[in-house]
Each structure stands twice: as structure tokens, then as C-alpha cells.
Image (cartoon, one colour):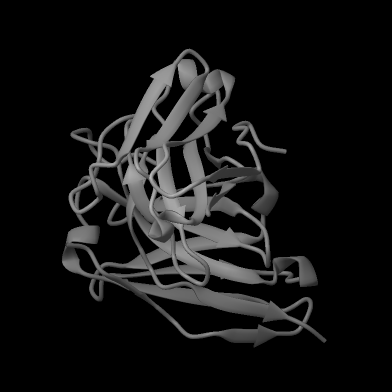
Length: 127
Length: 108
């Protein structure tokens, strides 16, 4: 069973950056898995941000975050990171990491389902 | 805007069958997955690949697909099933993952 543990809540100023970590059990870093990032603004639905294939470090992200999001992994500690820059109040949300798998094929960045989720990290952007 | 369309809300009485739909052109080519989210909690996968149920999910949860619409069915809904439900698939070019807007299920 995969477990994902995220870093704690953050309060940031507009224009700054935030980096959220997601420490995974070993099964989340294998040839069939990706780490996806999803956010949820207050009272709103889920929004896919992007994903990364560990070891290959190949990434994909939603167009909404073009140029602002950076996803990385540290395979030595089984930790994934998501950094979001140029923050505005519209980025206030709970950010989730999730393990994505797509069946018997090797890891790919889309056509996955997310079977394990982190507990979420609250990011508040306020002046 | 969402490429996957869900009704904002569905209401059923305890013991009745709840059906939540998700529509999108890409669903003719790609599988859909369903998540349950209770207030203040992370989402939980309840159905994947249109109709597969992960271990630990009650048998009353099932999924089906027809054309551009997928349906999550909860047979004999219970009070504990009251939650938000989201469908998820990829966009029409399989470039990005997409979530539906979510459906609030009320069991009363």
C-alpha cells in the first residue's frame, strides 16, 4: 500500500513562491507509477496541475500553470516536490500529491488513475 | 470550463440507488475514473477504468460506460456515501488529465 505524506501548511505573500513536498513509500517510485499534483481552491472542485515520472523526471503540466510550476523528485528519499511561483490570491488552495498508475503499461503522464493521495497541504496567499 | 460535465447535485433517500453521470466526447476513446471526497478529506478512488472497483471499496459502488457518458452507480446508498464525487479522464488528445466539475451527493 502506497502512503504519501505532505509538508505542512504555508502562508505566502503575493509574488512569492511555495514548494510543497510529498514523501512516498517505495511503491510510489517504480516503473509503473507517476506522482501527480492536484489542487482544490476553497469551495471549488479538483484541478489537475501536472505530473512527473520519478527516475526519468519527465514532466507534464496543465496549460494554466505554464511557466509557473516546477515538479521534481529526489529518488534517494522517495520525495516529490511541486514549486509554484508568482503566487496570487487565486492560488490559495489545498494542494494534493497522488500516485498515478495506468495499468500494465510503463509509467506515462496521462491516462492514469490516482489510487493513493497525500493528506493535502493548505497554501494561503495573502498580503 | 471542463471537458467533463457532471450534474452539480444528486439527492436520494437511504437505500435507494444513486446515479451520477459524467459526459465528454473523449470518453468514447478513454477510460474514466471516479473519486469520492468527504468534507475536509483527500479524495478516494472508488472506480477506475470505467467499471473496476479497487480493493476495499464496497460492492454497492459500480461504474458503467455508454458512448460519451460514464455513470457511477451507488446501489442502496447509505448516509456515509454523502460526499462530493468527481470523474476524471484525459482530454481529447490524451495530453492532460481532466476532472469533472464534481457532483454533491445528498442522502436524506
